[in-house]
Length: 338
Figure (tube, rainbow, N blue to C red):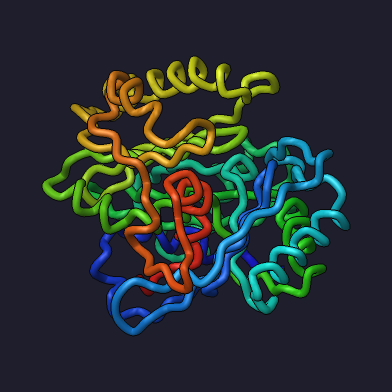
């Protein structure tokens, strides 16, 4: 089984220049397994310039797939999911091999954690993270897989971004790809992969310690993170309740939760104003929610556009709706080399 050890790489320091000389650690093929569909993206990296988008395709998940949670996967029948994964590889001419696996945010518990000071050793830090998580996790810590990243800080406190998943849930998704002949070499979450795709634009917009947000409206949940300069300030992921997933029902829930998040950011975190929000939305046509989101205090809304980070080859086309759908997988496939 692969670990979540690389999960936080896209968010590390939020300092893009330090990635320039590093070799990309992510496979150029990424598969996202969401509740409703599975997506495959294959890139070909260049020494210079944007990578080529060689192939992308989607297949629906089995009809009986359910909404996943931190306690259970949403795969439905694993055999059927594996068959459709094999179809993805075959239809795109992609040889199964080492791939990145992108999972929904709501399969994980992602949180920002602060410690009064930096523990003296990595082992002590590991123990402290596990101790602080123990009371808030609905299963034994021995059953968990954990990844965390120490974030930049302007004070004596140690700030961390922590992701925790139930190991058995991750393994079931990995087994689907393994049954299709692939080897999951890296596990990512949708919004952190999306951040990886947008990190240059986010860093540019956040220059001068401005506050910039990233909103990922996926099927069954949405996640919001806010960056101040080079510091991750806020993260929240909210699952939609059954019945709230229809397009007409998403709008009021999204507006209510975004308003509550903005209020917390302003009142508890000293936020003045979000200047720009990058949005990926697969629950409505691209751009249709821009006005309402801006009215909620998210500044200027900019749709995420993966085409700007890619070179299209072989007559491939990437319309805005398809771009929104494959954006997290593109971010995972780009890795740190872009």
